[in-house]
Length: 188
Image (cartoon, rainbow, N blue to C red; front, side):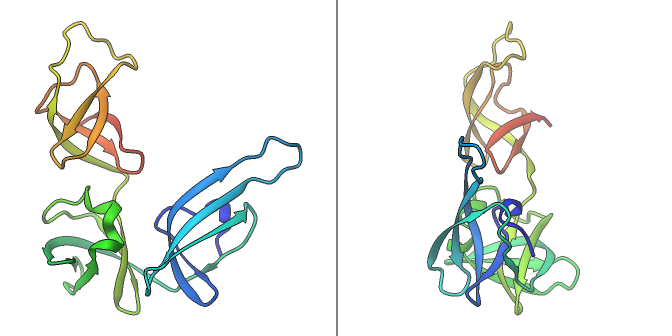
């Protein structure tokens, strides 16, 4: 049973006998003495896709959902569905595009290392690695005298995501990106 303060995006919990996946968490820390940190959580119902929002205190307990985590590989899109394959049993799972909208920008063809969350033999969500490597496709030319300071410039990655990178990087270089924050981590 996870506490509200331990929730992360992509967790699946049970509320009112329904399974919900965490889509977004907004943490509010009041400045008054003795005040409790509040967690405003936005959920999506796994079966009906309806949105649900609730505010919890940090120590509020939530119920876990019986789910299986399987290592999967992305295969191909099939209309509004996306097909993944279990890398150990070779069974295929389909998931709707709406359920993985946020993760879809990071997924490339035949990508491995993904984790599928499965409830009753149906994939309900995927977890992507926190750090992924991408090529810089477009950015301003690198500056020769640029130091490794906090000065940044916009860049477009090979998957179309736009992030801020240090000034010294050039197009064609491979970089490591944090998929949760969409921030540059290091050269790859």
